Image: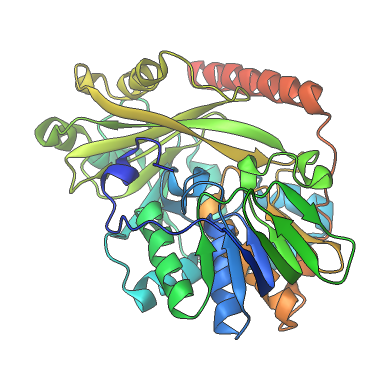
Length: 425
């Protein structure tokens, strides 16, 4: 199925299509979902000598994995202190180290596979929209002390030299993080999986599964995969295929735009190649693409599945509120993608029953955590490690359906109000 009209779909380095599943096949592992978690698991399983079959309902990277901001940075959707309250300090630190490993894993994969069109660019700035130098310096010191991870503190003068917005104060710059073209990355991984003997089927939505026997089956409209292990990695698009999983997360839509080409105007206000995110609870994130000619700007979340009619205008207003100098720069494309969020705001990675695995719930910080999630599930399937147990405290908690979605939307509006009040002060 054609991709949604995004900047990434317009700049594909490889546009080949893959066949739909139209027969019965056997594999060691069946993977449902051709996003970052599923493909990373498939790659590591194939490297370990396992036969894999990936079933993707649309095209590789069609969902949030191929539509996001392209930020690859350590951490999770919730902060380290919150994780420590749920797991204890030592386990929280072990989880954070996994997120650091996830960043390194993506970087290594880009370099090893020499994937065309990925174009990784180092550096991500996390900027404050209120005074807060002391807190940022304390975080910098903590990362260095606990993880040996170096962040760079930027005072307001340094921030203003890079980002000409009156909204910004101080920042932490992460020189070890980077940003890139996620869809080209995913498609490059798919090529390597196939080179190793893995099979990938597009336009092959799973309509039924049988999970009770030693050999599991996943059926599509015209075919079936039989495997001893099956991994569900469909993110916000998994639907109700696995009820226990479907009840445990809320699909959240996030929105992104890309501007028209306006290199001179953009370079007048954004004088860095770093990607940028702000500290608000309901913040924006953006980066320059196409060698600085355009801005890719993301932000806002809703629990509605359909896009608002004025999506592009809403995002444009958010951009201009930060950079009034960009008034009049047009939006060339705007799109959304569904992320999956659990109540505990952590990834859901584990084994539901013998031979049935899941890797989802990556909303808010997905590019590094989906990668490491796919890898540790592969390690669990092959018996290489039991690192998957680190995610045991973050189970499949019910989100209470429509009530949960309403609560999330209200919480988001509340966060926006808190952000407004904090900046006003």
